[in-house]
Image (cartoon, rainbow, N blue to C red; front, side, top):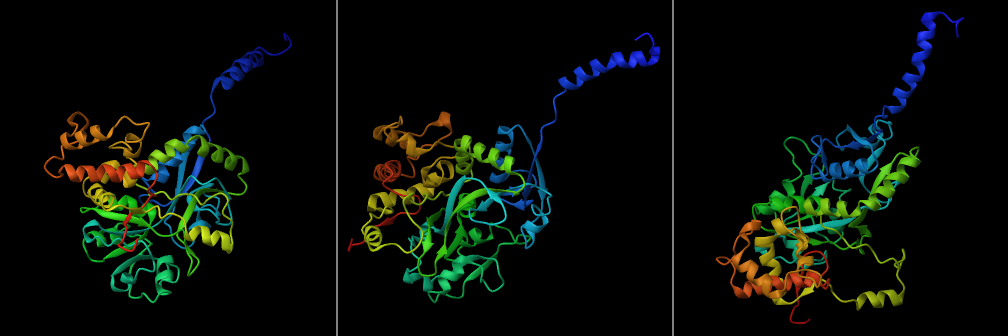
Length: 395
């Protein structure tokens, strides 16, 4: 050591200290690089206010990562310009079955919805309803001739033409809420809209709007209307894909709360035993005799109407709750704290300390009872998600 010049000796003595300091300095978190549209609420925007932004942040925090966005408008060439160009690694909110990615487990399932004004009382729940030929119907379009629009395809196959188109590509003048606003303003009678868009903008409408799900599959045209939604990850990012998949499972409760806050209508997953392809005679017979889980009594139907006039903006679509008010299905269940008597008293008198007004001036005892019966049907899972319908005289 004495043979080493004093100046070099000093540097050598510093090296262990520098190594210790470097070891103590934490590495900056790796970025979770998300491809997203900068102007596509309720899904995403450049301020991070969409529910896909919120879910991405939730997953990134769980993985000890920070979120970085590469924004590009949803247009033709979106995939080519974003994830395939390696500008980002992760694409939120794609339908299960898309090629070209590693895909995670579904983190929600939704379906297209019929949207109409509650006061019109249309009660449309079938693509074969003969009234559709006389209604002014709005659909979102993708192709210039509607060829890529699922609703236009199914309705056209039934001889229903003259639809009102609303573009899927948004500009400063053409906004995603336009189709819902047209229903609220009575410019169209009915709209067929992808569930998350329908729920989010219907909640903000100035008049009560109702939602009812389309079938998972239109048997006439084989057009699907319900989709599992997954996260797409670049194929080279196998480790990241696995970590995101595990995070979605860990965070599914918090993801459900975010979806409820944005009023996203959720669809039931198909039965695990269901098989693809043509159903057997036995399966067809079972389906034909399956109970109609959207069929309700006259009182429950009236309760649904009162709920959509007065309650759903706070308590959420299908009474599933929101950031403003609790999930009433849990509240009136056997595990909840709200008895029948307490429900009637609370609606009548309100709970000022919780920000809930008294409904005494707007609802009488019979109407509050109808409201309870509707919510109880939801709570008991006798009523499926979506707009209920009443029994006819034939039923």
